[in-house]
Image (cartoon, rainbow, N blue to C red; front, side, top):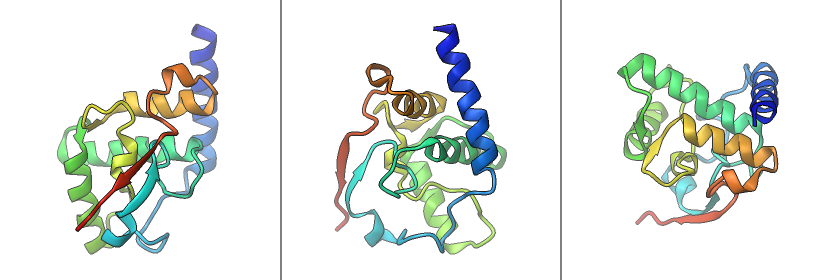
Length: 142
């Protein structure tokens, strides 16, 4: 277990270095409300159809930015959606989650470090600890 944790941590740090200049802005993809509607995959936070370490890094970066701004890194999905809407209107906000619902891997209604660990477990093929990561879900916006 300790070796797996060390391996995941080393992979995460390496990916952080690779993805450190990567973040999603409003120019990235269709992130309007119409971009939310439809099928998505838990863990694929950046909505690029691939669950990779950049998804875990994006969630971690978002949590850090949100904590610095609001003083809390136990973020409800509703708060992440509101922050996303704020980011779409304010170009000075760099880090947000294009598909916040995809970051709530454990299904508790909050985006936490536990969700990031689920993404890392999925990437490491440790599916029994990845919870809903990799499973499809539908967002219906009227």
